[in-house]
Length: 113
Length: 111
Image: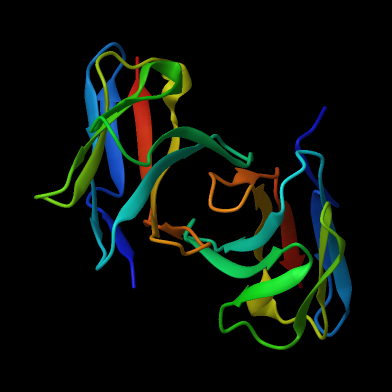
């Protein structure tokens, strides 16, 4: 079975500062990895995904993530955040031929001016 | 055009009532899901349908009954609502094992 741990429940940063949201997963099979963003009172929007190939994945809104198989991590990064990035961020894993996504607990990113 | 739509957006009802939430996707996907997000924002899958066939049923009370009349629709009916059913319910769809697209959610409040 797959599981996901997001190591920080809340991350406060100042505007224009860099940010890293940490995600570790466990799985006994090859995995697909995802980051979703949830703005207040909205649904989830896909930021980026890793299926195969290059371990550095670029997504929307200037976000990127790096798949590290040896450390079983898929951390999300952005070099310079904006107020509009304030949201809840979810890491998710799907293993092998499984149909379901298993989500982490979420990380609330708060941007301070 | 909305890719995955849900109705209603808000649902307030009393304990013991029966209610339904409807979901429609216009993406041509063959797989649809229901996820529940609790008050701590934790997301957990409830059901998944592939081509109208139930393929995932995650230890959900049988008061919850999904129905998929066709590939584009997946409805969720809940009998005898309880306080603990209060949550945000998200419908999603994907093509086979592709990335799920999520609907806007239905906030259910049971009083």
